[in-house]
Amino acid sequence: MSNLAHNRRKQKQTQGLRKTLGLVFGGVLIIGLALWLVSQSKRSSDEVSKTDLLALGEEVYLANCAACHGIDGGGHEAVEAAPALNATEHAWHHADGHLQRLIVNGGQLMPPFGESLTDDEIVALIRYFQTWWAEGQLNSQQSLSGQDPLQ
Image (cartoon, rainbow, N blue to C red; front, side, top):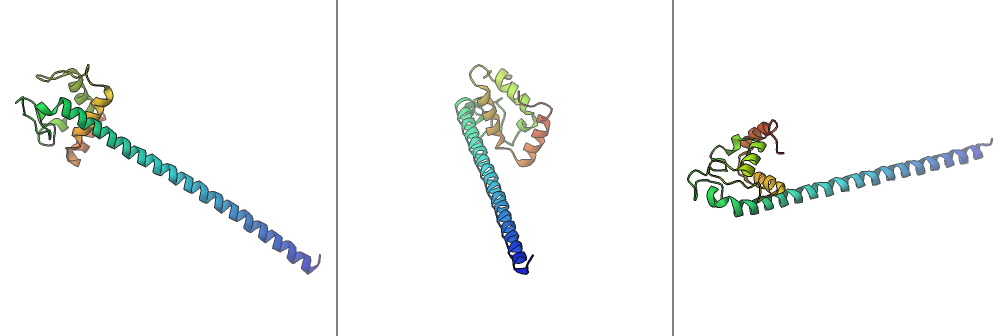
């Protein structure tokens, strides 16, 4: 084989290798971009759903709980025995499952809401008043909720 033929063959191999590497790199880039876009859309929908959940929780709270527990969850509004649901008293000492049962079945003076609220509304309500708790309180409460989660 002549030197010229050998150089042309090597040049074609190099061009083929460059083309293959370009296609592989382009494919990896497209797949990476697609995965990034999917993760961004998932995060956006998670944020939207959290915002929707808290908005529903606030609506439920204002319509059903604020009269006794106070607009800001400070408690003792129309009913002296209605405890605070914010960070000032003991609500954060109760696991999610316990809070859910109190809302569904009622308490000492609190009427049951299991017939008038959906499961989603109850979860939204709990998540809403949990926003009033400090991070340490919420972390402590969430560790309790591992043993007594929402049903």
